[in-house]
Image 1 (cartoon, rainbow, N blue to C red):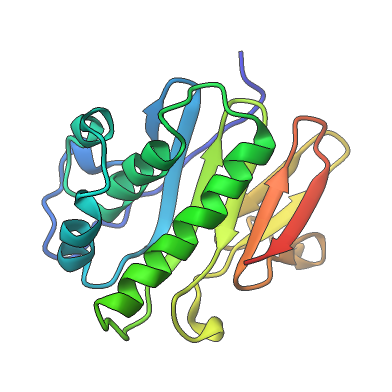
Image 2 (cartoon, one colour):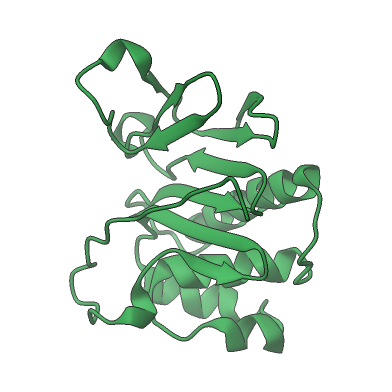
Length: 186
């Protein structure tokens, strides 16, 4: 049994059908994936990046959300490896964010995309708080440490806000299986 727990309250994207297939978290092997935000002009980005997907990654996509597509894109970059190391997962997350930003620039999409992703392999957690636009517009991401856990949420879960720290914008947040934290700038 994994010590990691993910929960996601889905706020449906305007214009997208509300179906079970479009609900987070998405799963592949031991990986769970969530996203708080959106990829602007997703239909253009999807079409542009779809050519990079292997058949295996493409066939994982059952719904029509930017979240599920980004997960398939992430897994494709990972070579569909179900047992990647924490270092490989983190490097791949950084690469995926860079590729999304490059595609937005190449397609001249100037509206910001909100790229808060969460990934676990069942032992470790990788989070991003990122945007392709103005840093102050990125959705928030907070974390709180206890003696035996690290909790993260879009907003503090209690009125005791002193216990919550805001993750800096355009950063990668790593929680390893020993609950040690590392924060890297993207």
